[in-house]
Length: 119
Image (tube, rainbow, N blue to C red; front, side, top):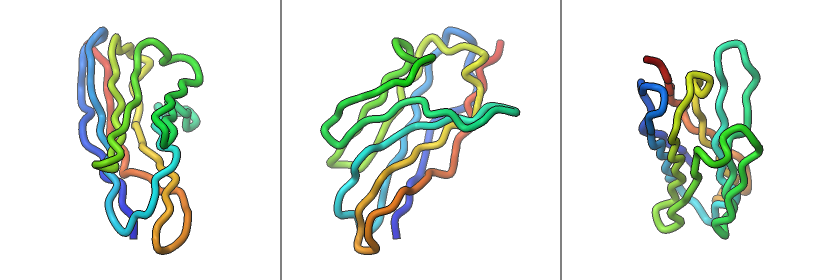
C-alpha cells in the first residue's frame, strides 16, 4: 500500500509565498515522475509542475518563474514552492506520483490541500 500525504497550503495575500509538501510512504521500490496539479472553482484539473526521478523540473506554462518544484528522493517527498502568488492561483492543489511498489507500478494521489490567495 502506498500513500501520499500532503501538508502546507492555506490563506495568503497576493504577492505572498507558500510551500507545499507531499510525502510518499509504504512498500515503495521506486518513485518516477512526481507532479503537482491544481483544480480551481469551476475549472478542470491543471498540471502545474512535474519533476523526474533525476530531478529535471518541467512547468507547462502559467506558473513558470513563480513556482519551483523540487524533490528529496531520500525522503520520498516532493515540494512546491510558490511565490508571487496571484488570486488566480487559488485552487485545491494535489500531488501525484508514479510509483513502483510490491503491488506493481501505478499512479497515486495526495489528499489535496486548499490554497487561497486573497487580500
